[in-house]
Image 1: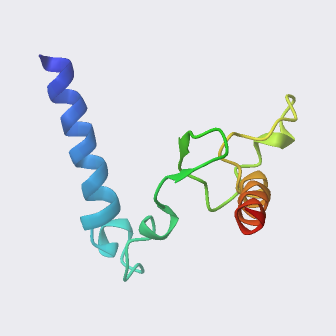
Image 2: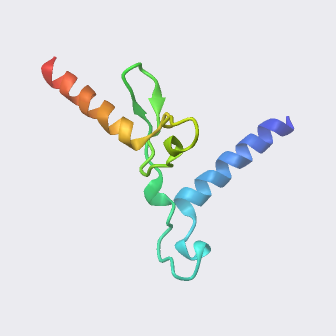
Length: 90
């Protein structure tokens, strides 16, 4: 029961931080919430999965693994372009 309550509280807190929090909570120099502009809706990718694409690069590919994250905006833009072109052809 407590896990469900904590999960719901986390969802509520996240919603508040992204959508309701005033910019001043992030410092006196913020007129608007600085996090809101980085939150986007989930989109469908080619395999039918739903994914929220990052708007900025996390530079994960610069680490030892040299792999991009699955929400990489660089890769996602390429996939969106391919998917868009595919729909134009069909």
